[in-house]
Length: 392
Image 1 (cartoon, rainbow, N blue to C red):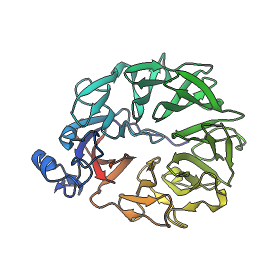
Image 2: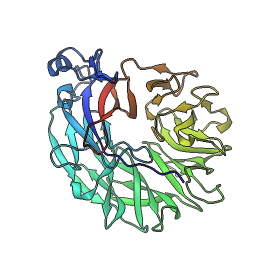
Image 3: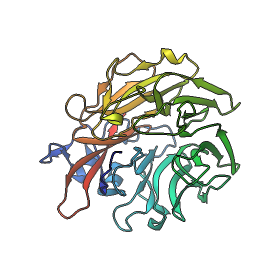
C-alpha cells in the first residue's frame, strides 16, 4: 500500500501572456508587474476584446493576487480545486474565509460565494450557467449543483456521490451504492433544467470517472476486473460511451486499463491507459491515447507513439477542450506543458513559457490554467503553487 503524505497548497493566479516577469530562485517565472500584465502581456485574441459580438471581455487584471487552496494537498485523483469556462472562474479560496468555493467573473472581477468553507467544497466543474462540486454532508461526499443562481444538493437511491463533471445544463457524477470506497458505483446524469436525475451507466462492478458533453457521456467501467472496482495499483477497465439523445451504449474494449475519458468535439475523445500490470511509478506514467468514439478501439493512437507521459506526482491529468488536449510531461527531465490535436498526427508541441513544477492543466476556450509548485514557506503546511494562464 502506498502512503500519501498530505500537504496544503495555496495557488496564486497570475496571467502569463507573451512574456513573463523575472524568474524566481527555483527557475519558475516570476509574477509580472500589474501594469505590464494588464497593458502589454496579453496574447492577441485571448483577453484583448477580440471576441464575438456581445461576448464578455475577460480582464487579466482580475486574476492578479488571487490565491486558491488545495485543501489537504494535491487531489489523490487529480481533480484541481479550480475550474474555468469562458470568463467564469470557480475556485476554492485560500484568502479571506479560506476554504470557501467562490465564483469570479473575470470580465468584471465580481465574486460570489457558492459554498461555505464548512461544506469542505472541492473538485469544481463549470460550463455555461451550470457549476457542480463536491461537499461533505454528515461526513459523506455529495454533489452540489449551482444552476442559474439556484443551488441544490443531489440525492437519490445511493449512499453518497462525487466526481462531478459538467456540460451546459447537465452534470454527470459517480454514485456509491454503499458506504465503502470499493462498493458498487453507477454513473448518474442530472438534468439541471428539468431537475431530473437518472442512472445511466449501471451494472456489475464500479462505473466511475465520467465526462459529459452536449452529445455524449463517457465512463470508466471496471466490470471486467476480478475485483470489480478501481485499484490504483492494479485493475482492469474499459471506456464505455453513451449517446445522450438515445442512451445508445458504445463498448470500447481493449486489453489493460483505460480510464479517465475526456470528451472533445467532432466525435473525438481521449483517455489514459496502463498495461495490465504496471510497475512503479504506476500512475505517474501512462499512455495518452485518443480516437473516434464510433471508431475501432484498436485504431486509437498514442499521442507519444510508443512512449509514456510521465508526471511529477500521480494524477496530473490532461485536459481536453474542443479538438485540443493539453498535458504535463516530465520525460525531458523537467515538467513542460504540451499541446496536441485529437484529429491530428502523432506528437505534441511544447507550449512556450510554462516552466517549473507544473500541475493541474485546465483547458478553456481561450486559455489553459496551469499551476507551478514552488518551495515550502517556513512554518507552512506545504508548498504553494502559482496558477497562470497560457493562450490556446
